[in-house]
Structures are given as C-alpha cells and as structure tokens.
Length: 216
Image 1: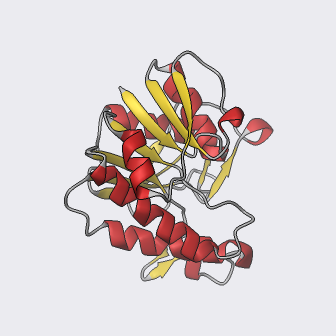
Image 2: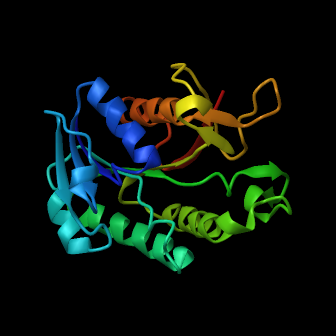
Image 3: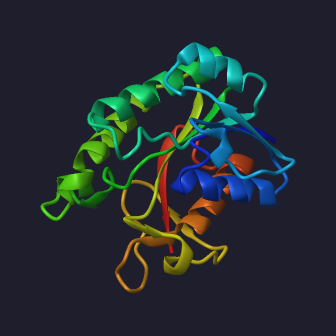
C-alpha cells in the first residue's frame, strides 16, 4: 500500500513508520522537520503544514490511506484548540485529496472506566494532560458524524511505553469503548505493539467508522 503518515517523527509515528517499512509499504512521511525522519528507500519525507488543508490535500493525493498521528507539540500554549482544529483540518484535507481511508490515533482519555465515567473525567487523571485529552474526546465525537470517509479512531491503552519500558511481543487484544485490561489489572501496551495494531487495521480493516482500543 501507499500510506501517508502524518507525524512520522513523533513517539507513535516513529513506531508506525518502522512497522510500515518492515511490511514493505511505501510511505510519505508528513512532518515539520524532514531531517528527523528515518532514511529508507520506502520513505519519502515531506515538509507539510498539516493544518494547511490545501497543502496537505496535495501531498496525500494518490495514497491508499492516511494515518493521522498529529500532535501540536508539548510546547503548544493552546493545545486544546490546536489539537482539535488540526485534526479537523486533516479530516477536511483527506477528503479534498480524494483519499477514502483515514486512521486517527487519538488518546485513551475518552475510554469509559465505569458506566458514564470516562478516564479523562476521573479525579486521578493528570491535570497536565487534561486539555489534550479533552480535545481528543471532542474530536472523536465530531468524527463520529463523518459519513464520507472510511475512518477509524484508535485509542491506545492507558499506559504505553517504548524502549526499556516496552517490547515488541507481536500480540495484542482489542476492545471498543472500554480499556483492555491484562491479568494484572493494567491497561498497557508497548508502542511497538500499538504500531502492529495500527498497520493490521490498515491491511485488514475491522473497525470502519468505529473507535477501538488495544492492550495486552
């Protein structure tokens, strides 16, 4: 497949890029800083402002799917607005570019940890992450009304690690609106196995116009 990957140099985006390369897909890496993207014969790094609908639409034309790993960055002073508006712009650009398939990597904050209680609304949710999580939840509610695209929204586990904190096990379990808990009571996955779930969904879609989550 020919995949446009937005945010290919980020935490999740880098893992997804590696997984796409491993499986032999052709990738257009859409980033702010192309020099940060891993060099590979299958990868073309392109500097594009993901919030510029016209520029992004041109960059993604002819692709089979778009993976949206957009983040406004931790330095954003208006992360709620920047994240929400950025994702809306990307969604519009995907339609303008004529691509049907969109996979959005969102947050875990909108997962229900109890009836009528989402993680982001729990007292224990870190205040530093709250604005971004609220924005991701609101975007999920918006994209649920999208009927033109074959979209999927993926919420990671509550905990996610890479490097020494996580390994590529090559396995995961899926859920819909509630966290996937392991035997130890944790909702956990490595970013490497999250990337496997993302590319699996691209290759063999199971959650068209749905949100899903993963965990061990």
